[in-house]
Structure formats: structure tokens, C-alpha cells
Length: 371
Image (tube, rainbow, N blue to C red; front, top):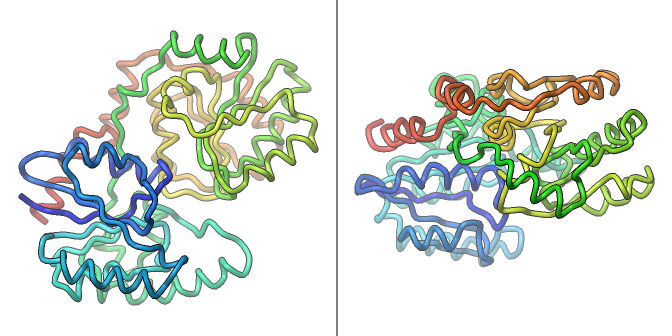
């Protein structure tokens, strides 16, 4: 049995967490096993599922809360458990903290993977400037501690790795089970009825409410679109630090009757089915899982070309537009989008692109064990 210690699961069931769990569901066999190290004492996303899959979930104090306790617990963990693992797989959005790799090397874990899941810092201001300096410093130190370099996209790889390391970086696709996101008419009708959206043009966005996802731009779109189509509604699925700011903007633009915040939802397939268009104007991304799920569902997608890797486009009803373009271009495309109902074609597109999970998981298992 090849044992992997995974870092990267948090309380939030976001993109990174979903990528890890999507792969692990297919990798769980007699050849490979995952345990999880988390820098939180709270319950993490998918924790019950992981325990049911016979994985151990270890928790230590977050470094930001108490550095002394964090370091003491981290050191103790690796001293006691490092010998149990063949590999550590560190999934992060920046290189501000590489302590997990340092400890893994110190206590003898032979294969040490660093996996980049983003292409920029999520913060702004002084905090971001400090983090960026640390990120750049650790970028130069990384080869001293990691043995393998992974990224979800080329942009994410360039953010993490020096030119010399880029040559040996592997792109690990954020693959999904496309068949689990297929359009569902029953769920569409049920959700639209529950939220009084039956006769509306429903524009949807799924993601954490924060700077990176640029939901403010969605509000600008709806503000203009309501002039053309008074029945338009904007639905935000997710939670995050910008919730209050977005509510303020909704009030400022007098969009209270046009915008719904429905929070974190488990049935993403149902919500994608309920949407008429998926709007995704992110400022920066690694490789957004939400765009893959939307395309698997067949809902038409309008996304920012400024930040998102071009190879994420799988279906023909996917449009890249620049955030610098006049908003009328965005409105024009949204108003003429059409859903892709050919489920066979969608599945074929995913298989050809490499984003279908079953094939991708088989390749990943080989990388873990044999490379």
C-alpha cells in the first residue's frame, strides 16, 4: 500500500478540496491510501466522507492563530508519523508557508509534492505585499525541499516555479466526473419554482464571494441587463468575505428584487440546471473547477479572458470576453446564449480534453507510485 499524506483540505468545500476528493474517490484501492493533515481544529470539508473511507484526519493549530502551538504541533506530528508515509502532497494557492515540505524532508518523507492551485495572491494592500515578498523568497528556496512540482495550469505553474523548475513541472488537470453534473429538468423546475424564478432569465455564479471571483462585475452586468430584460435575476451560490460589500452594492444599485444570495449549496448540478447563463468574470484563476462543472451541465458560459486559461473551454457554448470590453458586449452574448443538451457530445469533449476524472485518476495513480 502506497501511503500519501495530503495537505490542502480546509473547512470550505471549494475548488481545491473538490479536486482532492474527486481524485481520491477513484484512487481509493489496494494500491494507494490518503491521510490528511489540516491546519485547523474545525471540521473540514468532506470530513465524514474521508473518515468513512478509512482515512485519518490530523488537525493542528493554524499558524495565523498561534505560531508557537502551530510549530510545536507540526514538529510533533512529523516526528511521530512521518515514517508512515511514502509521499506528502501539499496543495496550496501560494508559497507563503512551505513548513510542511521542510518538515517532511527533515523527517524522511522521500516524495514531496508541491501543487499550485492559483495564479496570484487573493489579497490586496499591505498584507498582500508582505505575502508576495515571502512567496518570491520561497519560490527560490523550493527546490531545496520539494521533489515534485505540480500545477493545475501553466499560469499556476509560472506563479509558483522558477524557469528551471518549469521544465519538470507536471500539469495535473482539475478533472471531474462530467456525468454527475448533467442537466436535470426536474431539479431546474423545482429550484426555479422554490425561488420564484419560473419566468426569469436567470444568470448564475458559483464560487467564493471574494475579490478573485469579481462578483462586483456581475452586479454591473445585471444593472445594465435589467434595462433590456426586466425579468432578469442574478443568483450567487457560495459564501465568502465579500458578502457584506456585495449586499451594499445591491442596495446602492437598487437591485434588491434582482439578486439572490443562496449561500453554500450541495446540489450544484441542480443550480446549474436552473441557470440560463453561467457568468464567471474572475480577475485571476488557476484552473476553475466551477467552469468545468458548468460545461458538464451544458449551461452556456461567459467568462473573463483576462484571467482564465484558454484550455478550460470544452463546449462550443463557452465565450471568453475581456473585462476591458464595453459591458454591452457581455450583454449581447448573454442574451443570445443557448444550452447544450447533447450529453453524449459533452462527455466526448471531456474525454478528449483530459478533464474526465476516471482517465485522469488512472494517470495520477501512476505518477504517484511509479514516477
